[in-house]
Image (tube, rainbow, N blue to C red; front, top):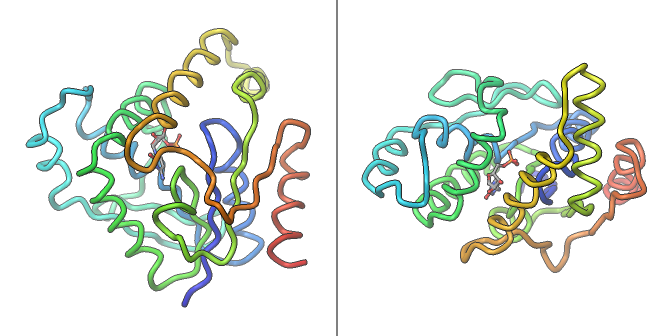
Amino acid sequence: KPLVVTIDGPAGVGKTTLAKRVAQALGVAYLDTGAMFRVLALRLSPVDADTPSGEIAAALSGLDFSLRGVGADTALLADGAPVGDEIRTEAVAYAASTLATRPEVRAFLRAAQQRLGRDIELVAEGRDMGTVIFPGAAHKFFLDATAQVRAARRVEQLAAMGKPADHAAILADITRRDAQDRTRAEAPLRPAPDAVVIDTSDLDIDGVFARIMATIAP
Ligand code: C5P
């Protein structure tokens, strides 16, 4: 059975950065499952809670995901084309979160994610990797931090890139998406019973990375 490491947690907790680094260190592929929800959201946009099932089914039919490469450079391909930064907006993220409440979407992506993890070793990042998608994963992590801490970090990142950042607006976005991800009926965001929960509030990326690697390869 190929090695699978899962990293789950709320929006803005650092999952993507860490999953890439862990994948790079282990020499395995990296799977960003949030990107899969985002790709679908972008194809369907605009999306809301009333988007008809028929429209969703049409967008899903024939949608094919694959991975290319390993480590931090792993590329996610949708229908053979690399997924780009066009999915990295808060509007797409919230639409993805709304779609993620729909059972037919979760069922489709569950099958796609499990297929990707069947043959290759990977670090998989998302909300339900440890609970639903890869319950038998060798190592499971759940990263957490308060919404306040996550918003403050995001403001810092944006400031470092010279971009304006409104702390209150970012906090509102994070809180709204958290609420939807934690309260949905199917696969709500929560740690798997056997996950190592890491409170990242007082740790930087290097600190969290060290904790994860010490658990995987002590
Ligand atoms: O991780 P990311 O912020 O890119 O995910 C976007 C949205 O997709 C999340 O807010 C969540 O609702 C959904 N998602 C999910 N299950 C996953 C990954 C993402 O429900 N495994």
